[in-house]
Length: 293
Image (cartoon, rainbow, N blue to C red; front, side):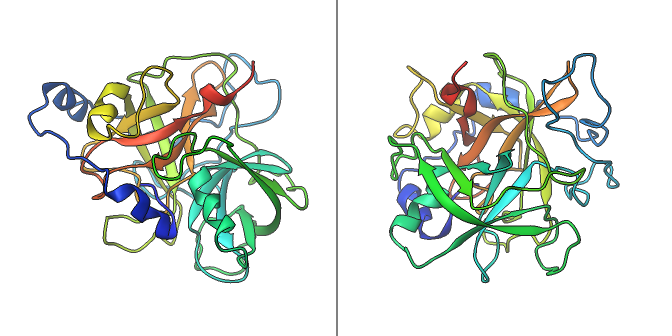
């Protein structure tokens, strides 16, 4: 399923380094198992409740598989050009009028002003034109981070303002946001999106899900030296052996299941990865670095 949209992929390819196969620290992470059977997560309430309804999931019917069930993740949104073309980036519903995505997903609109953007909610199979819960909502405006660096993908975060409110239901609803600073090192997180299944493959017709592990940011720094800073970290590094997010997943959510609420919390946004998907770690925007508490 990593992370660039359209021609902006060219901006990052030149800086992609290779993973050292003999890195003992990396081998530790590669040999760490992740739990695939998470289909009951996010359904029943946890011992603590959230201050609003958010981050729930609907019952999954494919145990341990990569394909998400229809509307399994109500918080999921997608970006596409109005009336044409496939989904090119993911996003997460924050409020009835706001969707969060990666800045590089919306930056190109400054260059191609003729493209009208819509956000799709309630989507599962993008080849079906009349899905019951799917709806396209026109975009009113885009608020990109003022310090977004289009070549280094720093501050890769953007807020999409919708022209009309999203109608919340059991199948469409907001993500939970972090309420405190949490160290996610070694935590299992979930990536969802319609991105490619392999580097040279086609985009997925249906929404896919993948569990990954948060690893030390220094490992991403070694692989993407020009784009990573550990002094004032604003990114999360993730890894899964032979599996990864891929082109088309950009802007989509990096989700962490809060054990106290049993609800999915939006902790990151898919930003970028290796030129060849699933050959090294992936870089994600760390949402907690941009939240006022």
